[in-house]
Image 1 (cartoon, helix red, strand yellow):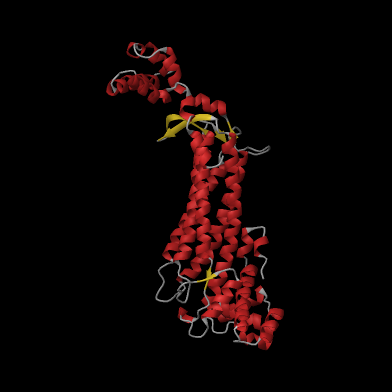
Image 2 (tube, rainbow, N blue to C red):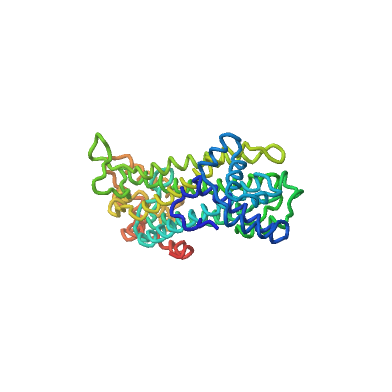
Length: 431
């Protein structure tokens, strides 16, 4: 059996060597199932397991002549096995082996993705806990809204990645199916019990009803889940890029000793990793679209999906693996600047506390319409005036002073009011 779960790198799963080894694993599993059901001699299976091997270069050499990769592979294996090789691939069609082996590869790839997804989840949980009370301004439409904390923002990211983990686990189960059903999937020349036994040996489930291929809705769903995870990472990366802007500078990617930001401008410290992740997410979305287009094959099968899958499946899993590793490191090492957060939060004299002032005025007896007009007038005056100070304007406004005391205003401008119920979210996430 293949040591597929100990491989250190995602790229190893998509080498010719590993692919052909997986093909051989499927063929051997089917032979074992055939022997257990008395369809072929047990001695032949013993010979096959002892002698079966392949040479990648020899397979490619044969394929160059026969123009069929599976036939080339089987021909090369039989060069090692000899007469017992006549029992290999018995009653099978190429897609039986190809799609079942692909499922083995995708399960192994998903296990690697889940491992690194867990590491990102833990990094987000750790940083959310650390910055639970690191106050900053929340923004909507890119405009200052009301106070939140950096930990609360990270809690939202954590919740999203936990959902993504559930999605990926479900997609793994959906893709972990094999088929050993013969041409057009009718089991005309192979016993369905062989499929069941072989799939069990490969830690797969038999497909419910295959044609000559496993239906590509499964692969489309799998890639859609990868695209959603990539989109989540992109969302986090875009947020970091925005918060690293010079005029904001609330967080910043770690800048290592000796790192350079620009060939022309020595002062530059650019969010290059976040920008890289943003670009890679676009690729995976494109692969998901291709997978959707692979669903509609002609009749019981064609191979229009095959050429595309040789690109999109390795690329998407390798890219997402890289993105998860990169984002985890980024989160763990991210520089956070609480003082800049406080500075930005209090710009224009704390206009972000306008709703608290509005509600307090209403609570003290002013109509909502009048209160809104008074607060908006003072807020916009602060916003549009150089060095404008919202709180100072309120303190000088007789309409406000006749209703609110200095203590009332102090309460309105206390950011802790906005954090009093955040514990609810943190408890839900076990932070």
